[in-house]
Length: 151
Image: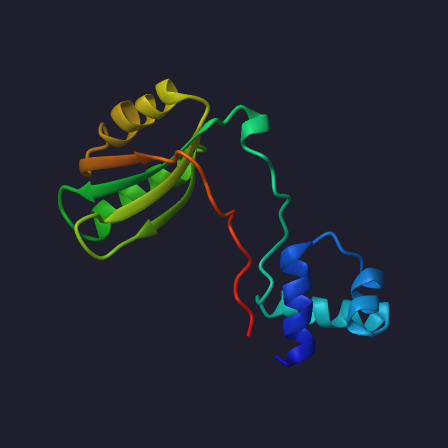
């Protein structure tokens, strides 16, 4: 990956809707050259996909929260069962395994506190692998999810 690839990735992270013509103008390249580079970055898995950024509030998802989950027991079976359940919940938009006291950190969007309460008490805590749940409701997101730093 050279400096042109890095600049291309940076431009696409900020606006994936840029056409090859617009990218070419910013990179001083022809649209076909940009298209080939972009295709190579996609083929190698450097670019994993493209998404539209959607305003959760306009979808009626007014509550964002982070939920820490501690499992009852540890092992591949427990983790697999929990991960499968997480993937079925549309409110859970991202999940991480962690070191430390909590085993998982979940980022969720819900329409209201009642929906968050249902997710915690009737989905997460009812799951046989879950021992403890701790949630933090986001009051204000002071920085949007930023593009990855590309050196």
